[in-house]
Every structure is written in structure tokens, then in C-alpha cells.
Length: 332
Image (cartoon, rainbow, N blue to C red; front, top):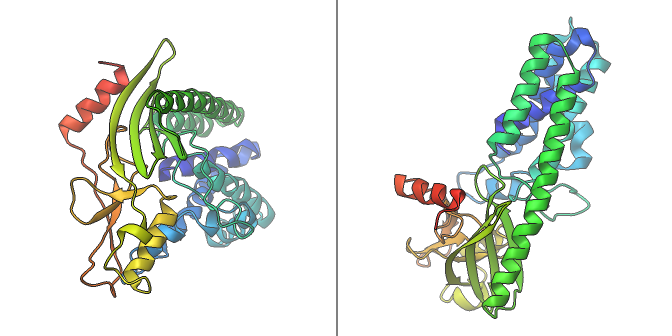
């Protein structure tokens, strides 16, 4: 999730096990430890743009890296806190703060190498958006109250509410998945692959992306409590490198980048309908029923010896925001 939520969760977990006199120190230690997992974003290369994509949410987010991540955090904080916390107590707070960083990211839809090195699979539970103000707000209020009033039990209540919110996300995911499967059945489509994930900042409006007969279909699904509504989207041809990358040598750098990007996007790749030569990740768009991909790689088949350019393409205009808000409210 976003850095603020990662840090707040780390702070809440550390405070939940802290001694009364350590509550404020533990909140700072836990926040720092919770943020440390995202240090893998520094694994980047100017000559290979996809390297940062491959290593973000990688080994530092693995459950097997937790004790080492906590040790690194404690080592970095020790010079600042050596006169205020015993080494064992500092490590314990770092361990609590770091412990759920990878699991929290796995609750989103981006994908986390949660069980590396035993498995290189990206784990995604699709329970919550990468940015969710409700989830973050609960943590922020709990940590702030605990810090202000020296009451650790407040964060325990906050953590319980966050857990309940994730359970609600699971329920909504099942409802939205049922809607997606029913929609495909009505279209007489045989779903070969399907991913359903929450749109930005809520558990009400979901994005369905499925593959049927070498075509990607996207739709917005509003899984309301009192009623459900479908906002049909568009479709685009699935990009199959073995078929569609004609003219690009299979032993070239560019072709290998296409395969790397397909692995990262879990196979949901297609040429962007509006941006020439852009191969996009069709799982993500600013609007849950649109095909405009948030990120992708540019295919320059005239220079296959070069790495593909990786870029972000967020279209956040007033019209887009208005359409999103209209679907979120359930308007026709």
C-alpha cells in the first residue's frame, strides 16, 4: 500500500506490544521499520527500466525476510536510541513493525513476492486498493490517540477494525467476482482467466478484467449493498508475443523485455488503443471500465537491441474524476 499506511501499520503493531513508558518511542520505531520494506524500490537501473518493476515488492517483502529486515531496522536506529531502549526491546519493536509489511501489500492487487525464495510467484489477495482512506484513517486515528493518551489498547481496537475491513473486502470480492462471471456467461464468453480488484480508494466499485478467446474484456462492477450495477467497458486483443511481436528478433533485448513485462502483468497485456506502440498492463486504469493502461512499455521495433521504455500514463482529468464519481454513486 502507500507509504503512509505502511508506516502507520508498523507503528500500530509496535505500540500494541509496547511497555507503557515506551509507547511513543515504539510508535516511531514501528513506523520506521514498517517503511523499510519498501527500500527495494532503490533497486533500479537507468539502462534497464524494468529492473525496478521486477524488484519492487520482492525479497524485502517476503515473510522469510522479516527477522533480517527487523535486524537491519534495529541496526539503523540503534545509534539514535541506544540510550533510550535496550537492544532486545528495540529489536522486538522493529520486528513487530516490520512483520506485516509484506502481508499488507499482498492484500492489494499489485503482487508481492510473499514466499520468496521458496516461490517466485507474486501473491495478490485483491482485498483492498493500494490507497484506501478508510483503512488508513482507522490506523491514523488509533496511532494518534495512543500517542496522545499513552493508551496501547487503542491500537488493538484499531487493528481489529482494520482486520474487519479486510474481511469486508473479501466479501465484496466474492460478490464482484460473481457479477463478473454472470456477465461473461450472459455474453456467452468462456472465461480463460479472470482478475477482479477494487478501484481506487473504496470497496464498492470494482474492476473486472478477463480473457476469452484471445481478447481482454474490462468492466466496472458496483457491488452495492442494496443493489448491483454493471458499467460495461471495452475489449482489446490480447497481445501474444509469439504471434504479435513480428519483426522483433526473439533473441533481442526488446523481445526479452516483452516477456518480462508479460510476467509482471500476469499475462494481461495488450496494445493501448490510444497511445501508439504502448504495450500496457490492462489490469489497471484510472477508470475501472476503461482500457487506458496506467503503465506500460514502448515497443521500438527499429531498435530491438535497446531496452523498452517503461512509463506511467495516468489521465486524471476533471472528466475522468466525474465519471468515476458517477459510477461510485451508482448513477446510470
